[in-house]
Each structure stands twice: as C-alpha cells, then as structure tokens.
Length: 508
Image (cartoon, rainbow, N blue to C red; front, side, top):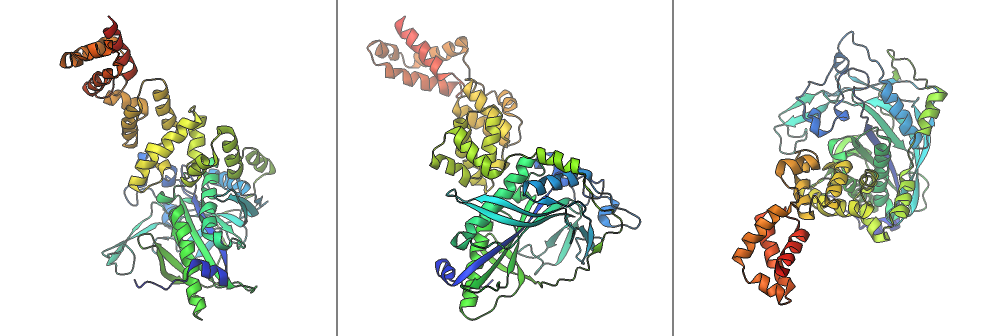
C-alpha cells in the first residue's frame, strides 16, 4: 500500500477546521439475542467459551431468516437501551418502531437488517467528556437506536485477512442477531487541535457509561464496542461543511485517536494541493498507522427502509422510564471528580489512572474492600505491566473483585508481595480465584514457628558464625540467614518472624 501524503498537523489546523462525528455500536449483554432465543455470545466472557464457540452453533431460525420464522423483541434489550439513552441525556420516545434496512451482504442472511430508522428509541442528548487536563467538552447526541448485529466473514487465502486477494470467504452467523445500540452524535465543532484527544476521550466516556450501567462488557478488543469515526475539514471562515470520511470499526482507544489525527493530516494534504475528498469508508491499519479506502458512500444511500411488518411499535410506560431513570449511576465526569476527592490522590497520581483507563476498575476494587492506595499500586504496577507486555487492556486480565481479594491476602499477612505476584499470574492464567491459587500452588506465608525454626537451624548450621556476629552488635548479619531461609522455603516464610527468631537465638 503506497503511503499517502500528510500535512503537518499544526499546519493543517491553521488552514482547516476539523468537524467530527462518531457512531458507536454497543453489543448488549442480554442472555439471548435481539429477536431470537439463541444464546447471545456478547453476554459471556471468554471464560465461558461462548466467544470461541464453534461457528454457526449459536443460532436459531430467525437469525438465518428461514421461511416462517418470526422475530420477538428481547424485553431486556429494550430496558438496557432505554437506560443507555437516559444516561446519554436523551429523551425517550413515547413510541418507536423497527424498520427493515435492506442490503445484500453474505453475513446478512435475511438480506435485510432489523434496525430503527426515523423512529429511534432515544434522541436529542448530550454527554460531558473530560479531557486529560480536566477540560470538559460537551458532545451532542443525535440519537441512540436499537438494531441487530450481522454475522462475521472470514476471508481465507489472502495475505492480509481482507477480502482483497482472498481465495474464498467463510461465514459465521453466531453474531447475527446480537442486540446492538448505535449511538450517533451530531457534528462536533470546536475541538480544533484537541480533536484526536476528544475522539479517544469520547469513546472512553461511552465505554465507562456502558460499563457502569452493566448493559455490556464494552470490550473493544472483543468487538463489544465498535467505533466508526467521521472526519471532515473545511477551510477557515467557511460555513459549508467539508466532505467526510468514515473510518470503520476502530478497535482501541489509542487507535481512535491515531485514526482521527491521520485523517486530518491526510485530508488536509489533499485539500491543500487543490484536490477534493471522496466520501467513503476507510479502514484503519493498526500495524502501519494509516487508513485505506473502503467503499464509496453517498448521503442518499437507498436502503429502502420500511416499517418491520412482523413487529409492533415499542411503547415504554412512563413508570418504566421513571424506574430506569432512578436507577442510573453517576456520570463518568462526576465519578472522576468524586474519586479524586475521596481517594486523596495527587493530580499526577490520578492522571496516571485516567491515562491507563483504569478508573472504573479502581473504583470497583475499592468498593470490594481494598484501600485506594493499594488498589492503585496493583493496577498501575504488576497488572498494567503484564497487560502492556501482552498488548491488551489491563481491565481484561482480572476482575476488580479478584484484585481486592489479592490485596486482602497481602494485608492480612497471608501473602508477601512476591508471593502475591505469583498468585496474580495464576489468576490471570485461569487457575481460579486468588484464594484457590494460593491453596493449589501452596503459596501461603508460613508463620508456624516449628517449620521456621527447623529452616533457621539448617541455615545456621551452614553459617555458624552468624550468631556470634549478632551478639557483637552486627545485627545486619541476620540478613544472610533470613535469605537462606526464604530460599529454602521458596519465599513462603514470614521474613519478619524469621528475623525475630534469629535474634531470640542470639540472645539465648
């Protein structure tokens, strides 16, 4: 792929104003699919095996559009959608309905997608997005509507995994019919040079809202949350919007930021040279950090929408909406402010958590009983180190509850930090909870005097002059024996108690 010319980012911003827009798809974690009784793979973590289920095994006749099969709306998906709409500051429609969005693609067995067109369940909202320095930017929401997901194509035989150059494609319909909410923003103005940062922060905010509601795991690497980023540029002083491109299915927060920056620089280079932007979808390439052309789009795409004849309108009661509104958690912006005030972190300590996208995990760990400082230590220390080495988000490795349990074992003296790191590795490897790993691996700290004295006697036999050195005031000589005991007991000895026993021996 030939590299496209880019204009320096600062120069691009001097000449053009960036206008953004985002379409974020959220897979809802209902037990079954949107319109069928088939199991919903988005409802299960990787541990259950549903994410790696054999192709075309989590399906029902409705998902395949077989003759005579009729859709039935998933009530829990509707409740989740209303909750999400309320959390986005949207109005909830007194009545909304599904439509058929007609287009052909192999992963869409019915040749149409059941979605919502001009009658979405939620509309006209806004979300406060906090940037890295605490600046709050308000993003306007146009709508949030319900729909079903399509299946998944795997292109075989090519070198890139894309359809270009592939010999054939395989279709897996397990994802077909998974309930989705698509959140669509209005055009976003005024971001200027912070447009890439705002893009990342907005998607992170949506992710945090979704997780706090408990409606989805919102794991970008699993496809629970997918972002399409729209970017257009217009010359300074011009009111008419520029032609936009849509970068599809960007799968990490960092990639969203990089893709928006790249598109600003790419489009600016074309416009600065007198060219024009083609309205199209673009594909983001994580390895090279560039976008490439997808398919040409038009503002008048004819999907031949018409009301879904097999489904009645959705008419939520006022009582239901009031109930769901009363159950809303605090907003991500308020959550941040509260955590910072309650936990007493310095600005830099708090910003490290924000940058690592671990505020939600930290809050849940503290809620489970851990001290804030210890929760921060483990999430930003060993857990983040392992996550970075694997190229994944730290929050995907271990649950906040397990981190809290691990911290409790250290605080009680049952584990040393060294042993706790081994336990952490076991939990991440899927060996069970911290307590289960401790028992299975035999990693608990040994504080029984009988076992410790036996190990001390063995170490002193090899170093008979240590006790005399201690008696002469050279207390530091005990360190050699402590080290020998810890090595002999594979780190499970209570080092403080070992030292006490050695000093008692010297005084005898």
